[in-house]
Length: 381
Image (cartoon, rainbow, N blue to C red; front, top):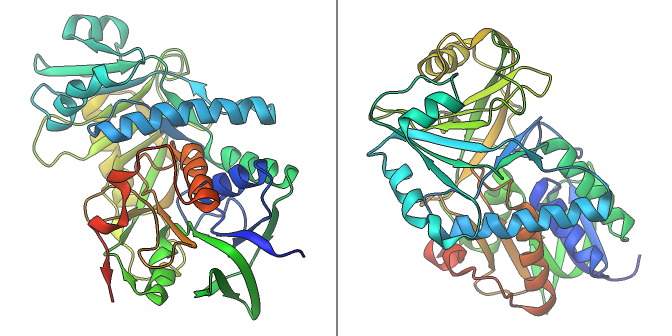
């Protein structure tokens, strides 16, 4: 193999998007994945992820708006339909900090958004339980990304443009060597001009060898799929993605997806259990959490769902301030680090891939990544 220009560690959505962006620009790229593409031990598998420009952080809203265009470019390039338009409805108490922060930023992104009052909410979405204190933000262009299919498409397109992909290869160490990088993986040594760490919950294992101590934490989150009682009102065109911030202190964000053929997908966002060792196999879904999800769903849409069909888990990777890391290593600019987190991290993957491609090729990017710089978090050992 000719000398590599960029080696990407991690075959989840961020690593796949980075390999695709680089290969499309004609770079010699190798993508290493320690399990298989689409495995269930990370954050990039499953039926669906939501995408919406409505967010309590302005820089996230701008990044998602740019990512939507990047997803469309991928659709045009691959011939695959990946953006499924459902609309996204954010609801909650009128005094909800997240809702109010999102409303404050709406004018900064040039996308159609509606603020809905109680009367219009009841008329358009009869599934919902509402109070006179409920307020809502509706983004008609929001929707769903089919997660596993998105990752598979990114990898297929990266290969089409010449990227090499190796699965079942676990990286044990990344080390700067001169102006390049040495990567040790399962007894093989790889050499590249640049390396991108996009390893999700496994990032902390690799970063500790690079004298970068970021206080990452990982949780195992659970989603449940319910059989809908109202089959028509649960389908695309009737039910948007609903994000309910609740009406009481301590309420977890409830995210509910329309039925794509496997039931209504529901999760209590951020209610997961800590993961001490990322290499531990995923736990069996907890029936008690299914019940908690069902109870919370009943508060949002009473009588809407029958029984749990099945449940599955995924991982969220958290930085101390809950924001992304997209940056070069503080001492070795040939090593790039991407920790997009697992809240809206999936939805912005193709634009993050383009940013990382810019940084790998030119050392800079036209996108404003100041909010995502490592300096706000890292401690040099």
